[in-house]
Amino acid sequence: MAILKVNNLYKSFGKLDVIKDISFSVKKGEVLAIIGPSGSGKSTLLRCINQLERIDKGQIEVCGDRMIDSSENGKVIYSDNELLRKIRLNIGLVFQSFNLFPHFSVIKNVMDAPIHVLKQDRKTAEQNALSLLEKMGLSEKANNYPFELSGGQQQRVSIARALALNPQILFFDEPTSALDPELTGEILKVIKELAKEKMTMVIVTHEMAFARDVADNVIFMDEGKIVEQGRPCDLFDNTANERTKAFLKRYNER
Amino acid sequence: MTGEDLLKISKLLLEGLGTTLSLFSLTLILSIPLAIIIAIGKLSKIKILRAVLNFYISVMRGTPLMLQLIFIYFGPYFLFEIKTPKAFNAALVAFVLNYAAYFAEIFRGGIESIPIGQHEAAASLGYTKNQTFFRIILPQVIKRILPASSNEVITLIKDTALATTISVTEMFYYANGQANSRQSLIPIVIAGVFYYLMNLVLTMIFSRLEKKLDYYK
Image (cartoon, rainbow over all chains, first blue to last red; front, top):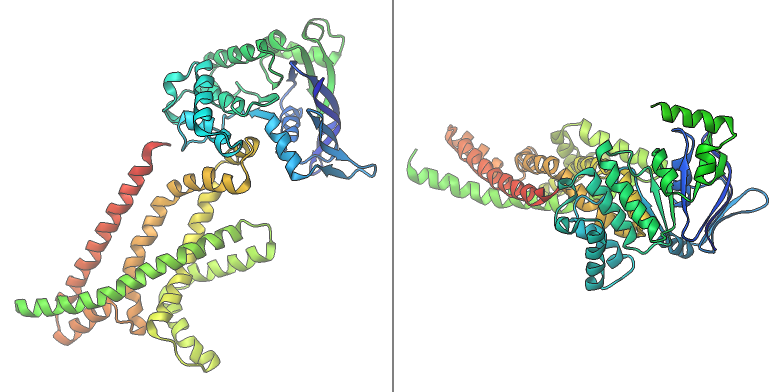
């Protein structure tokens, strides 16, 4: 069953076409990695699906709910607010720059949305938050504030915060790009754990070895288009596509 | 000057202090909500509204408060030939309009200084617009604008002395009067001590508040 379906998506900023006719889908339990050079539209694609950008044309469906449709004359039709909200809660998003709430303690960051958005009772939310923090190896940090944590720890809190709403699909927007190289490992480990538990995930990343390792499918994007799409072994080792080859070569040379 | 004189002067100044304090507190109570509305208006997408508010703020910040006091006090008579308002009311209107302009700029700057990522994180977690503003944004704004706001509040205490210009009987009005009639600087010095003490208290309150919000960065 497809958790996410994207069809013929277009998005431009002014005259700059950032996403040109992108279609793909993600099955339940699948891990999809999106790779590509900076400015290829990867992050914008994620932001469109997460309702942080308005699209120009196309369809997006999440868990069978039609989020955005386009009429024949090209007009974009967003679903009503109630459905958009429901869809939003089915989607989790982990940002490159964590975006934790600095005035909330670690545990409050994780349990505030369950209490005020999902209307869970405080005890349930707190227990759930504690077990998520334990899973992230952050039990002792529950009462600290974000500024007291390392970048890697902050990112793990933000993953716990997203998981606390029980999303059907979790998006990662370059989750390790703001981290020192020695801290990226701990985030990648967490994502691998989630993959083992069959969490459906879409990961925009520059970590090629990681993408190859954890993803069931890989999309290579360039200049707003999907250049190639396939299993990691096909795309990383046996690609016939010249652009993919050139991109991977640049990476391997670094 | 005898001790009795000093007591007399102090008593008179304290009488004026009541007016000073009510001008001060009423200005705060009225200008802060007005400033929030103006700040939100300035952040709105309505161009005309933004232009009007920009003009209002630039006039308030670009002309002397003393001039504004005189204009609001005498304006009604010269412009519309209606009765001159009570001096205190005219002063209050002038102070509220003037301080709302300054506070509005502080609030707007504070709201805009919160990184867009905070709004986006809140949105992606399903917070409503109201929840986002009141739970996520506003608490952070308050922490950021506290130092600038305390400056304004301290200046306001001192600015109330300007109301003397239109004969509001606040503390400085009496101090000035006594200084003239007694040919002495002492009433002015006593008033100075009172202003200083009030601001000492205010500074203490604000630094406490800042410390209280120091638990996060």
